[in-house]
Figure (tube, rainbow over the protein chains, first blue to last red):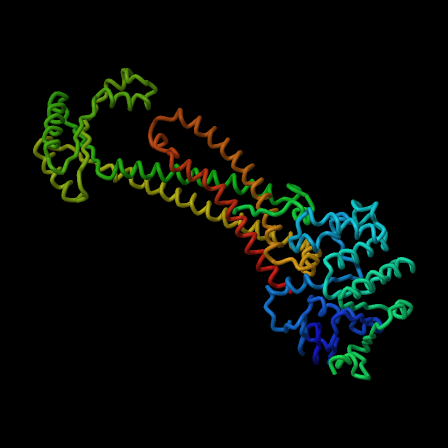
Length: 230
Length: 301
């Protein structure tokens, strides 16, 4: 699914923010990415959702080398990835409904096929009555739910979430985690960056990826050589 | 397609702030000035060509013999002899009434019945149009003819005194053409700045669209459409104002029948060119916007 081999990342002439990152994400697995602030979690996620190319190393996604991949092929890969941003990144002049429908529209899904899935998703995140509300009128938690709905509506093969439950109450956090788990059961590989230790303990069989000062902690080699590939 | 088709749901990805920015208004002013400069250029070029054609092979022989009867006979004989020459297309004696009428305008007497004017000893004039291009040879042969039929008469090639005017008018037409090009370049620059500003303003939206799999083409069409429509509004407004000004000038010009001014007009081709300019401007704006946007998007992963 995702393979990083000796990946390093630096911004400009500064020292590397990520060094020698190597791991294999297995299809249908669930990963938590943890680490202190500044450890490089967001940078690693950026490479996962194709917002950043590595400075060195090999990144393979869905079996293809992304480092050498021409730019015009990236959108096709991005449509297979759902992203939940820490700062939501909702489009302010679009309603909750239109924000959620965006990935499907970009993928060319017709309007007649949109209404059903978008309506279901709105109901599921508890915003069925606020479908036409604009982000500025939604609370932080509501915005986060919309952002999550937008990330998952196209049933991505890989879901990357950066602190997805940071702004919601514990009940909603569990519901959202339940959604991730349900997607995971349907075969989506999920990577969730979080500080929330309680969240981590809720998912059985989830694997931990811990970043420390830009390096991935993998003492057993399980991340680099997963059991079913070893 | 000058203005690309974009699904209505995608159009909402950009906030609807049509005509809110300065672009349509700047484009309107530039378009109006471009059309006025183009109209001036076309009118002047046509005027210069008309004058050039008229003076290229024309001379006037001025017979100043004191005896009016002898003067008239010399003019008549010269006209007959000249008309029979192979290098002459036509020879025409300018009637005294025509001369009086022309001079009468300067004497404040439109009918040429001013007593002072009538008392003046007017020369007899013979207008001669040459055939072919050997002007020096034709003039030499005409001098010989004039020496035989009207000794002492002066030969005045029109190119000598109208040539500089025609050249000046032609130069002004070129200046007008250069102005059209410069204003076209300025319009393109405005579109480029608008496209870049739009990218800057909507960077977060563009980045988001990229990350959920939108292609450069999808994003470009979105902005291209918006810029093309805003520009089209400006072009339509500028064209409407310029057309009104040109029609007003044309209406006033229609009363001008004398001298060089009467040769200035736009003609069918001129009007067609002026009508084509706004469409070309919209196409140029859309193309410029597209290229600017694609170049800018390539810098984003």
